[in-house]
Image (cartoon, rainbow, N blue to C red):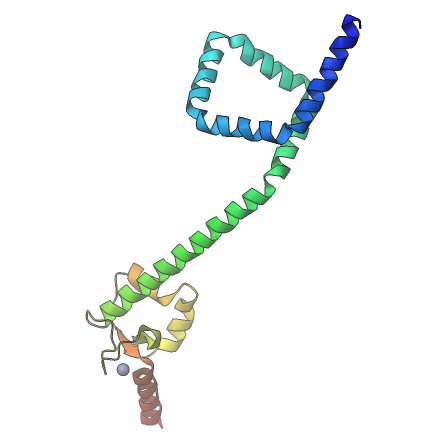
Length: 186
Ligand SMILES: [Zn+2]
């Protein structure tokens, strides 16, 4: 067997071996990189400093292989699409939870302030937050509320430093108050 033929056979065998163990090798490299990341990055920085020609070579290579670079980037982008979507989704979920929690806190603070320091209706003492809301003491509430509603009454009141003229009422007391006003007008 001549030398060239032997070389070719060896090359083919290497290729077969690589194909067979591709996934394993890739996983190993990935693991190795993750475990030694700091060290590897440090080494790379040192290499760049000591051999600026490496960076120059790479920059030149990228410049002359634009299509290949573009393709590789697109492939990478595609490969991590699912991961990215998952991350965005989780992040959004986390944000929504945080926003709702904050809104809830603002509502509590405001109701407590206008409940004279208690999370309760100032008329009857009812304490369930689900049935408590802010009442405009001297009326004009509906129009004002409609206007403010778009920016959230609770947030608005807190931002204004809790202006006078509001109180915490339960639905029952609010309903009774409205009825009393209607009857007094009739
Ligand atoms: Zn009440």
